[in-house]
Length: 534
Image 1 (cartoon, rainbow, N blue to C red):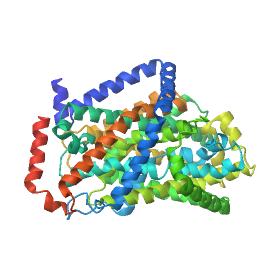
Image 2: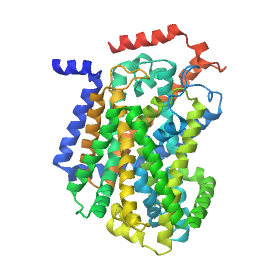
Image 3: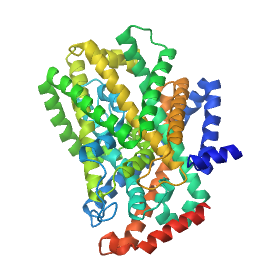
Image 4: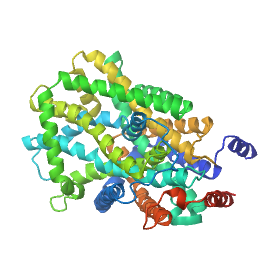
């Protein structure tokens, strides 16, 4: 134990968070590896219980977060700077937005941009007839909804109190518990704070493992098609090892030399592949469907945000909207911490509106072009994608769509590269944040030690293997929904904490923070932390 403590001190690791989290994670992965079928069955049963009983809570909570973020952006606190008046952003707007988008969406959007509209056409919401023209007309609109404004409200909310504590209060801990100080006070530095941070670690692992659990089979199917090897579990493990190596390298290099560069490459390559499909595909149809989808979204936003289908009980809100909101909630601590880390010097309004505008726009471009292409391919009879999806599953359907592109072999290779990088940009952000949460002391301009970052990168890879062993979409959906449940209540604490800090520092009159927060108060906060942490 003495050796472990010496390593922890030298690597700036908080053992009170690191060790309990690792012990529980290993304790969960061992039985999953021994009996994956039983674990998958248990996880599959949980999703039905939670979505049927608490689906309304996910929908109501997410909508209230969206309303609150609009109020903050356009209200009197919108001009509050996340930093001192002299603080300027560390990254250009392009790099900032690229890292924000890549951390939040990852390769999941590559899984679903082609496919989600097809699922909607097979089992639509709001009593729409399956396979009908109306189902095709509404398909991309629902994707805009699931990957747009409300997800970014969920993502950006934790970033505000975290950035406020780090860059305004000048605290030297980069954790969710730190952002709860406004509400919890000194309790945030005690056992309650430790429990919060450990729950956050589990939530991040659940969200990222869900992403990898869904993405690895797709990548292995693409490898099988491109290189003529048989698709198998062994190939999936090889794909996962390759992924883990990429994001481990990125997180080893750090924020500016690894994560930022990978995010920029990813964004440019994604725009190129989207442009290829837009130019060579049914361009006019894509433009028509996109315009129509935006109109449907504007007209039906409130209804679909709170739709639970209580009479007909078709199950769409529970299977899709509740799952997505839970997935975003599971990711929210990770994205919030990461966005806070890269947002020094931005204002509350700038963070929210840029996240809403450019984050949603980035997602909508994917679904408008790739989703529109799938809808056109299905409705025109070029490919029976719905049949392929029903009979062969998601990976085979994506391969079929990619193969239908001009210069298909080169498109597949480019798609594989983008798939690898896109997921790596999410995983390296997750490993970076997990290392930050488990660090003993970490100021706003400091990075976690490389040892800590690499350790969490390897844990993410191992958690993904556990998800693959469990198998099936239901299993990974369950992981997100179950682990996201505590995050709903944590969101309420974060909102209360942030509002309390704003009220204390600015009151009814909005004044520059440097007039309100004096240097002796900053010193007092640091001393309070040191006493609480021992």
